[in-house]
Structures are given as structure tokens and as C-alpha cells.
Amino acid sequence: MNAPDLLVTRTSKAARTAAVLGLILLVALIAAPWWAGSADMRLMSELFLYLALASLWNLMAGYAGLVSVGQQAYVGFGGYMLFALTILGGLHPQLAVVLAAGLAAAISVPVAVLIFRLRGAYFAIGSWVVAEVFRLAFAQVSALGGGSGSSLPVGIVKSLAETRSGREALSYWLALGAGAGVVAAVYLFLRSRKGLALTAIRDNELAAGSLGIDIWRTKFLVYVVVSGLTAIIGALIFLQKLRISPDAAFSVNDWTAFVIFIVVIGGIGTIEGPIIGTLIYFALRETLADLGTIYLLILGLVAIVVMLRAPKGVWGVIRDRFDLSLFPLGYRVMPDPGSREGR
Amino acid sequence: MEWLNAVVQGVLLGGLYALFAAGLSLIFGVMRLVNIAHGDLIVLAAYLGLSTSMALGLHPLLSLVLVVPVMAAIGYALQRGVLNRTLGEDVLPPLLVTFGLSVILQNALLEIYTADPQKLSAEVMETASFSVGGLTLGVLPVLTFVVAVAAIGALQWIFYHTPLGRAFRAVSDNQDIAQLMGLNKAHVFGLAMALALAVTAVAGIFLGIRTSFDPSIGGGRLIFGFEAVIIGGLGSLWGTLAGGVILGVAQTVGAKIDPGWQILSGHIVFLLILAVRPNGLLPKVSG
Picture 1 (cartoon, rainbow over the protein chains, first blue to last red):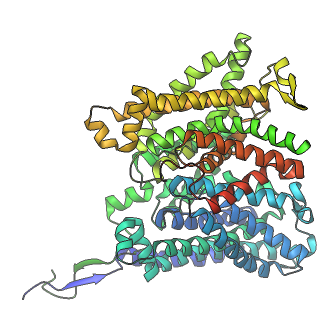
Picture 2: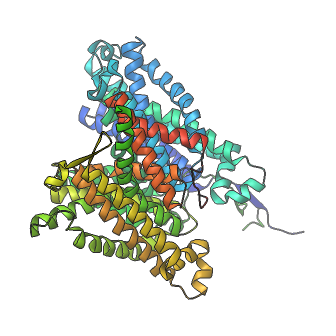
């Protein structure tokens, strides 16, 4: 047999270059408190938190087929847990953020059992009902300010760091860590055995089931983990805002609509999509936000056009055109450059 | 007696929710489409009613003569122009496109009508009431309920006793075979959406007469309609009416216990029914 030597590999030159550039960028971003102003840092923190929310929503909708319009339930829950655990429980904010994730994951279990009975679009609206229940329930808690909400007391804010610049740097690093951490976690998860099962479900649920993948359990696991992580992001968002109210915490526009637009425009079902989508969304927002409602009109229109004309989003177009993958998940077969026959 | 009153008012309120839900139920039954912008279309109808009754000096109920055909036309155009392209195996496109549509409608209404709450003025009818066996019933809620029953009866009749209804049922059963039998499914879907938005127009006008509205309330109306559909069972029109009534009663009885609990108790009853009877009370089609 004189078959050419073939190389089965996951990585590619583009991916290795992207990894190196990504690491350099990450180092530069970590150093931001020494080179960026506090307004820029706040904007970047917001960008990282949106990137995290978008990556998590993408994991659910793009891979697990769980299209939720109720993720604000966990954003708001995380925010409220931060306030409750620090104000009422006397815990340190950073500990509260971690605990919020555990509590959110725990509460997402019965929620999942209930709303997993709904399929497709009905699941979407069912998740919205759950978010409404959370919002109305927290509006009833008078210890946290009821419907008008409450602010994080100065003592708790000061417990993060003594100086103002120290607090700004810390909350920036937390946001950066959350954004980069979530993207990395999603990437590693999708490369794992469970991630492979999830990708199989995405591609064909029936076929995946017949190969022995427990579809319900895989989706359930994704839902619970995403809920917990979303609560961390929610806690960090409201650690930056320092003020929470039921309407802000459980806002469907802020925590779900924008996130969906980010993922759809960037490219659903890819890891790169939410990253590109977040950059496009912030670029649009910074240039068009003065237009007020017109800006949201344009955003809605862009999302519809993308969904109808290029359902794989901006990244999908780039990938199809240049056969590029910065976060390689699948294996590819190529001639082995190390052997002469492979040429 | 107070509790009985709460229940009766809840039943009547359920009529309004059934009107919210009937359009959703119809389009789900025909083409398995869930329209996230449904609530915003209800609000759009209320604003159209406001504009026509202000411009022409009409009673809001008379403005229906104009609003119903306009909404039906919007529905047909929307279905043929946009929504038909999203239908298929994948549930994501229709969901995301109608979600985008919802944001567009909300902000367009905000741009045109501002965020100020508006109301349709029906003068004496808003406060008129009559008493039956010790209960005082408002004319408007009773009329809303009667119209809801009539609308659902009419939809039911269209569905089972007319050629149009036969076409609806045919594409609902199997789109491809219906197409082979000479039905143009794009057109049939357009007609279904037109009919759904005609009912939505009625819902919007009654909503506007009953309470004040602003561009942001669409999401809440969608949720009420959706809960009525699920409680009643997917695809069953009379089930939808029953679902609306259950939701309405849950809300008024909840409000009787504690005014802050009105909406919350409706959601809780919905979740309870989902837990015990996931297919609703009178299911027709599987989700």
C-alpha cells in the first residue's frame, strides 16, 4: 500500500496564530489598569460581561437547542444574591459572587424539570415566564427594597479595596476574568466528550439519541451549568452598578434581547460568533446610541436581515469563505507535511 | 360573596386573555409558528384604534371596522414577506425573527406615540354596570367575554365548516401533501396569519378600552396569551378559552389575597398546571 501519510489533527496554522495573538491581547488587557482611563475600563468591563452572557446563551441556543428568552432570570438572581448575601448575610462580595452561582444552579434544577416539558418556541416563552416569576417574587422582598430596589452600602463596596482606583482595577479584572474564563470554559467543554455529545445533538437529535446519547440529561446539564455561570455574570454586573431593582435586574431587553442580537449577528453555534457579535454590538452602540429608539430599530432590523440572509452570521460568512477556525473543535484530515508522499 | 365576585370578575377577565391567545393558538395550530411579536401586535392594534378614533372621531368599537382589515392586511403581508421564509425544521429562525420584529415594533411605537400611557375612551360604556343576583357586573367586561366566546366560536366554525378551514387543517396535517393537492401553502399561511391578526385587532381594542397602554406592555400580553394557550392545550381553541378563564380567575383571586400577588399568582397557577398536566387541559396537537 502506498497511500499518502495522512495527518489527523485538530489544530491549524490559523488557530495557532490566533492563540498566540489571543494570549498577547489577554496580557495587554490584564495590564489595562496601567494604560487605560477609568471610562475605558468601565466600557471594556461591560464588553467582557456581555461577551460572557453571549457565549453562555450561544452554548444553550446554538448547541443544546435550548432557545431561552429568560436568561435574565439568572442575571437578576445572581445580582440579587450578591446584594442579599452581602447586606443580609454579611459575606464578602467575592464569596457572595461564587455562592450566587451555586444557588442559581440549585434553583435551575426544578426550573429545568418544569420548563423542559415545553418544546422549541414554547420553551422560550416558558423561560420568560420563569424570569417574570423571579422578578415579581423579588419585588415582594421588602428587605431588599421591594419594587424600588436597593443600593450596595458603602462599607461593603469598601471591603473590595480601599482606594477608588483599586476597586476599579479589581472590578475590571473580575469582568475580564469572567469574559475570558467563560469563552475558555465553553471551548474546553465543547472539545470534551460531553461537548461532542452536545454537538451531535445539535446536528441531529434523532441520530444522536440512537447512538446512545442521553439527550435530556445532556441538555439538563448544560442548562444548570449555564444558569450558575450566568448568575456569576449577573452578580458581577450589579457589583459594577452598585444598585439593583427588579426591573433592571430582570430586564428582558438588557440581558436577553441584546445578547440574542449579539449571537445572531456574530454567528450562532460557533465560539467565534459571540466574540465578533459583541465587538459589532459595542461598535454600533458607541456610534449610534445617540439615536435612541432608532438605534434599537436598526439593531432589530439588522438581526432579522442576518437571520434571513446569512443565518450563520458574520462569522459563518467568514468561515465559509476562508475555511477558517480560530477555536478548532473538529478533527480534520490533511496530508502530513512531514512525509514526502504527503506532498 | 366577595370571593364569588372575584371568581366571576376573573372569568370575565379571562375573556380578554382568550382574545390575546386565540391568534397564537390559531397560527400554532396551522403552521407550528410561535410569534414572539404577538403581544406587540396587540399593542399596535390598540394604537391603530387610538389613531383612527381620534382622527375620525369614532367610538373605539366602531374603529374596529377599519382596524380589523388593516391588521389582517398587515398579517398577510408579514407572513408572505417575512415569516414564510423562516418556516422549516429549525425552530430558531422564526423565533429570532419574530423576536427582532417585537423589538422593532416596540421602538417604532415608542418613536411615533412616545412612552406616555394612552387609553381608548369609550365614555359611558367604561363605567356602566348592571347587577345580577347580588353581583355587579361591568358592561365592558361582559361584552369582552361575549365577544371572546363569539370570536372563538367563529374561528372554530371557520376551521371545521368552511373550505378555508379545510385548507388550514390540510396544511396543518401535512404541508407537502397539501401542496401536492393544489393548495398554495404560502397563501394559506398568509390567510391564517391575516385571520389571527384580525382577532388580535379585536383584542387590542378591548385591551385599550379596559386599561391604559404604552409601547412596552406587549411582552406581558404575549405571556398571558401564551399561558392561556398552554393551560388550555396546544391547538385547541375552546381549550384556549378555558385557559384564559383559569388564568383570569387565578389573577383576580390572587389579587384578592394580596394586591401585589395578582400577576404572580397567575404565573404560579400556570407553572402548577404545567407540572401536573404538561399537555394542558384539552390538547389537540403535540408541541
